[in-house]
Image (cartoon, rainbow, N blue to C red; front, top):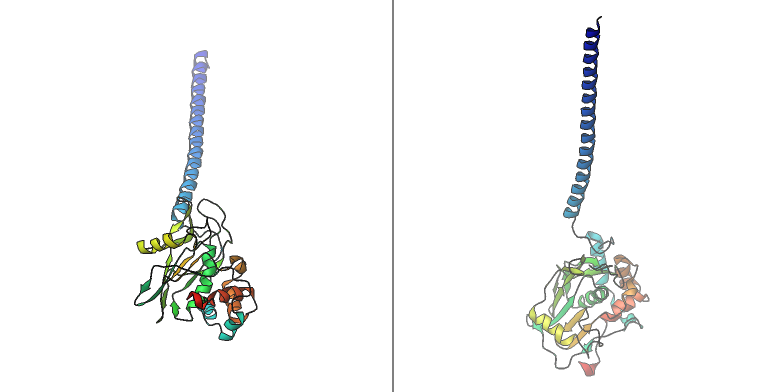
Length: 294
């Protein structure tokens, strides 16, 4: 083979090798691009999934604590709470020291009636542990004069929308939201202003029911000293008994109910008059003002 022929062959070989290497480099670049694109797509998919989950998740209660029994179990709790034998209520009397506050007489109170009967106004909130404690006694007392329907259970909050811890967290209780009460003796009007679901936008809790102007005016007028201690203005629960008496705050400590289930509380109320639970709940329900104050 002549020199010119060998040069031509070598040149062709070099061109083929160069072309092969160029093709390999292009393939490598495509592979890297595909890997990078795949990684980006994976990251985007994870972010999108996270956003979708967050968007579709409903606001949860202030903790993972159960909101209580339903169905037959709920009916059993309500039955126990509202059917305490007279012998037990008589034995418990004023509560043996468990009741720490009693209704205060109102001087020249604004009369409150509805449907031709004295009206008992309650203003509270589902997150409130003091409301949680008071509801047990209210249901027990009111069941002596009428009948509830549509009661459901709930618990007080553990943290608010600002992430601050609440006292007596997850106190088991009922909510009056969605319930009704019938009695030939009185009208019961409950207002649950907020849920137990934290609201980060306000630092408090999500809104539930809105009081009327007249109801708010009663709270402003009477939820102040001398009916409540100085510094406790606006305390809930606020209960206004037809213009005669008020309660602002719990009548007993929510600590009495700490760590107990709804069924245990109701069972103690009905069956164990010597328990602190029965003394607190029934003792509060038993309150009768002195004759001189009626």
